[in-house]
Amino acid sequence: MNTLNITFPLGRSDVVSMLQHFKISPTRQRVEIAEFLFQRPQHLSAEKIHTGVTGEGNRVSRATVYNTMGLFSSKGVVREILIDRERVFYDSNTEVHQHLYNVDSGELTDVYDAEVDMVSEPELPEGLRIIDTDIVFKVTSR
Amino acid sequence: MNTLNITFPLGRSDVVSMLQHFKISPTRQRVEIAEFLFQRPQHLSAEKIHTGVTGEGNRVSRATVYNTMGLFSSKGVVREILIDRERVFYDSNTEVHQHLYNVDSGELTDVYDAEVDMVSEPELPEGLRIIDTDIVFKVTSR
DNA sequence: ATTGGTGCAAAGGATTTGCAGTCTA
DNA sequence: TAGACTGCAAATCCTTTGCACCAAT
Image (cartoon, rainbow over all chains, first blue to last red; front, side, top):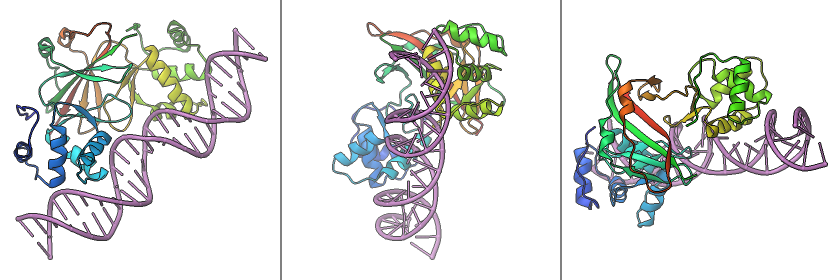
């Protein structure tokens, strides 16, 4: 996966070059969405993104948020996380890392423990290649 | 996680004792659903389960399928898999294993490579314990 | 002009919920 | 009889889609 080293937060010009790096034309809406996403590493739902971006005084439709996040995911700008039954989360943290999901609270946090990287890849059928490895530790306090 | 060694397929009496083992009262619907699930290790959506069970001549409502699968998941009878944006899958394979998800076809297959088990667990905040570790390798043929 | 991008509202579809009826201890 | 369970249909709510308008090359 084509990732970048990011120093949060990213300013407007950083965001623009990032989008160009991923061959995405930096329209106003996309830049505003990306700026919001890369203020810090975070896990956001489409709705949160929409609220956040419009809350900053920008005008972006819900449909465009979905379009844009679909585009960003497919290009590798963000990572799609499917953990919560309710909705999709988008992870603005592009570093290699894993997730801790608290099933009681729904809270999702990052894990960086180096040892996890030792996971060896499975035998793959001909012609297939791994594009992403998702590791989620489900935890409870009960 | 409280798992059992299962030899597929499970017959009605096996299913009944399994449910009792998990402290689930074996109603007619639950037994029929479990029988369908444990014919073989498989990944099924709620809709597929409903179609399959009623197709065998049993009468179970969609709501009961959802109720039952929620109950089975919470008790550890099956494992919930959230990979497909569209719907939840339930895994009747309770052995420790990982998944290969073909993003092109949506196909989900099991992985048993022993090496993957070497994954070490992350440092956990006080009072939390891991109840499940999900590892998904996303693959493509493109 | 053509292509790509956006916005709005409606549609779609999986899952949940309310509630009445049913079974069972 | 109480409590657990089920079924039906309506409601919910995230996400997608159809389509008209706008922007940029």
